[in-house]
Image 1 (cartoon, rainbow, N blue to C red):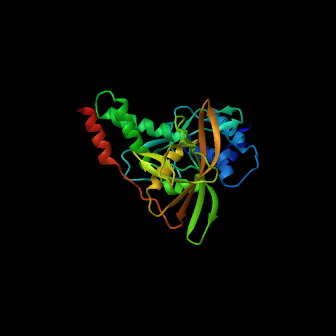
Image 2: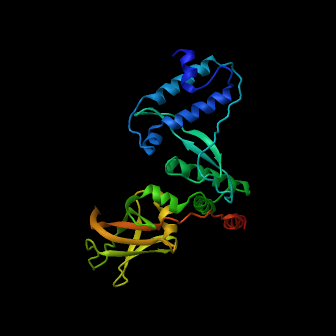
Image 3: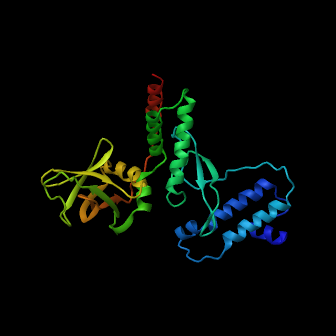
Length: 298
């Protein structure tokens, strides 16, 4: 690729320094990333992301060495100023379907997780790194128990449950004042139970118990089991909404899935009716995190 074409593709000029060119490059990567295009409703693959990567490589090869590298940019997500600490934001770009580039750190701050922008595994990686820094900074080698306690608290600081539910759920209906979203969950059957639990279409009550989502028969009150999800993000999204009085939660049994010898799981459909005017309130667990750190030292 010729150098003039490379500058044109990046929207840069020869007077731009390396930091400016790199910011423009990262911005174009984000705009032309297949996942970002999909969320904007674009389905065509015009090959621009490959051209952008090649253009940046060409410009870098023609730049004078020694320019200072800057690895962050302005991340377009909400910020929770009350969060305990900053975290990194990672993305992974692809040149072709079968070729992934290394993870790129594109931002650092108290950014709320946005399902439209940030893959959940990369989000959890960033929070775990932040939790390790917090626990290690308190002195001594962090125990697994204290680390996981801080990690789970920090995860909740960076998630807006209602906003994430609207983006992760399948929209199934709306009224003038509410929106309804659907999710799938699973109840593991107790193999020692002598009672047939599964009845297709039967309603299920869901509630929280010891930070777990559990299911019970609404008629008999019989405990049916803990609820699990294929998508780990739903543990941090749906569980807080079970305690939100303005959110109406309903569920029903869909089908029985055999998971092993004498073992079954019941697939359930969970529906959340969320008021349109319900807004997430940023939370801060500073006191709880400090308490967890104090316990570690005792």
